[in-house]
Picture 1 (cartoon, rainbow, N blue to C red):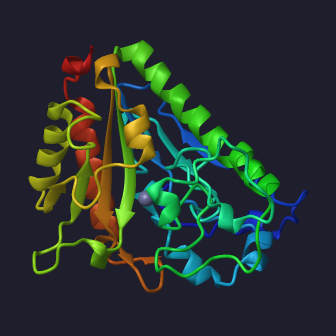
Picture 2: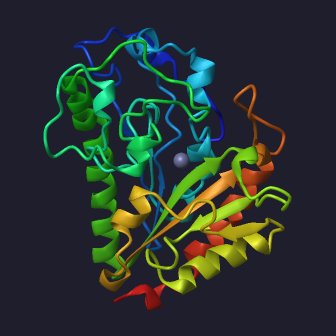
Length: 304
Ligand SMILES: [Zn+2]
């Protein structure tokens, strides 16, 4: 898709049950006619279907909530299926349910009732307010005007987290069976000011391979070279080394490799207005070339 239709259609439907989102399609899988390369692209944070009940429960307006999105990333990588590679993306917002977390990274202070013992309340992400159900947006402002119930968290995990990971795991398994290996590219974007340390020119791209543990070195190097050859400044693992998706699925010894890519938002969008900017078409075309080059490469060395 080259257009950016506002996804407001589902927002007019009433919630059927409390805590259950109104959309019928939380996860979109775009498959190529024929998969020709062992690559899978994933965009977990670009969803922008905000349930009306969520907006009612939030102290924040939609523009503020939207700053936590990796806006339009599924569009930037939208040519992957035309180049023989599947692309999966969430339609629900990251602030509603973050699939780049374990399923149960929850903050007990956000809930009116006690949480089960299996909840991971001690994770540093929870401490930062950014668990599976986020307490704050990226600017640090609290999202909710009330406490949630554990039942609401369960519903989001059942209707968003699980379908995303079921579909992603299925794509990886299919790819592994067909090609003997799989390279998952988990696609994100980063606010242009958040790329520390200061004084250095910030990178355009940060590649995260969990410090060399989530994918073979050749995969990181190939992606890095394909991007830097096109004039982008690429840095590895700092400040983003890879989230749950990268670390959970990246098992190089089993032939599954995972690499996270973070793109500076100022390259393609107006971060204040949350709209694609003049650089959007150029960036999408550039990424299309990179995907094409990667899809044509020989990945047989990724096999275990
Ligand atoms: Zn992200």
